[in-house]
Length: 126
Image 1 (cartoon, rainbow, N blue to C red):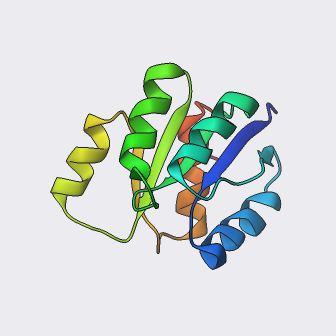
Image 2 (image 1 turned 90 degrees about the horizontal axis):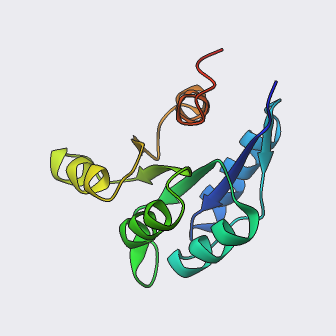
């Protein structure tokens, strides 16, 4: 099985650590050193070339939508999954407009997040 490199871009320490611990247990997923803001997400994307970025929509600075657009423009092969507390079609539309592969609620089940990562990396479902 091919290893999927995942970058977590999340400013909330507890949620970031929760994602990190959950993904670290998954066979076939390598969790990279997380980013805590939009600029760091871009920098670490350049350094580590992840397959998938889990991007918080509401990060300090320019935010997750800006970072997503930048990442997708510079490295079109990288997939970005937006994670947010916001619901509604407007947020989903904004995420799609900047090139997000998927849009998930932060309270999504761990299995749903894993499935989204696998689908984004073209691995499919388990």
